[in-house]
Image (cartoon, rainbow, N blue to C red):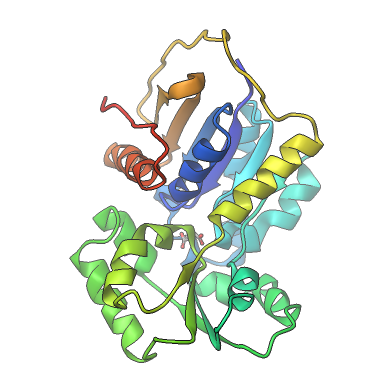
Length: 287
Ligand code: DGL
């Protein structure tokens, strides 16, 4: 069996990146770890987030991952340097998509939604400092939003109320762009468009991250070109993980550190929903 690409997030947010990877790299297998037991990372100390990230990465690498995607802006800020020092395999991180946002036409203000941790870390300051722009960059920390998204499995009534309150003070409109600097927020795309009456474009880093992964796999000559006739899949189950097979014999496994099986079910639901949005033709059959 082809080695998988290991992917992790503090919880369910990285599923939005996983969906994009499945669509862009249809011959690859994926092993996804959601650390919902320890979520939210965005309100923990740097030492804690580093510790969680090292632990989860070791787990994925020990299980044969050929590359690692840190599908979490917060964990990337805390741990990407240490991870790259510790492991000799392609490691792709994420950062709020400020660069593409400042390059958009007719934009005067770039508003960056992210966890409090991401916005106060050195990595974010360096990112902003290195961008040569006259556009105003506004930080919009969203404490508590990740917990609500995990609780409501996306955008329920509490999330909507949170967003309405959050946007109230900013009078967002023409000339603004909103950066979704946390992978959980990508699930809120439709509801944010509704609240803002489609007046503000939204930007996130999922596509860019997946293209970077593809480049690195190509450069290292480990991109799977065909996985035909390699089907030795014996579906194993334990309380923390479950797997499915999609078209092209693609194997996807979801693992969640939380004992409550609901997190894993929600993971599959969100993945299904994102795959449909991306029009991939890959639908997940219910277990
Ligand atoms: N999805 C994570 C990110 O991109 C959320 C971090 C958290 O758990 O607070 O930052």
